Image (cartoon, rainbow, N blue to C red; front, side, top):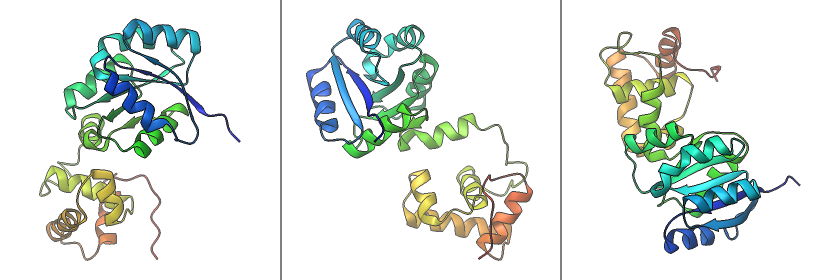
Length: 214
């Protein structure tokens, strides 16, 4: 059995700390080492205990940069009630490896901790779409100018052969909304099928998966 991901939780309010403690109480593969109620306490715990992950409230963001530099082996996840791009980018610039919402289900929080603990970057679904658009270096507007930005994103997922359910989960959209976007993409591209649209997208340089016709 692999070793559990060790965690220190830092936040200024009792409700935050106890809420996270409760959420992680029965989470498999996670061991809570300590709770800290301020920035200095978070730093002391990170230095003394050397956790895999430091889960820190956004109110302590001003401490994240120093902790990240002082404890480079500790992976930091910022917990926030704000799904705006500015807060997300501020957390990333400070050195966070994850950004999750206070509204996250306990299972989602635990999954994020385990993922960041083994080296992945994890961002809440509510902000992931904006981050993806911000970080991409590829411009599809010139290739498919007839599509909206959201339809471009759907087309990229089609290029990877994703199902509507997968696209809905990835983009945080309702299945019906995804169906409408896919229909619009096929109509605007005059594509005969999803596979036809995917091939055109692949020819334009989109997608990373290997497509196989059933």
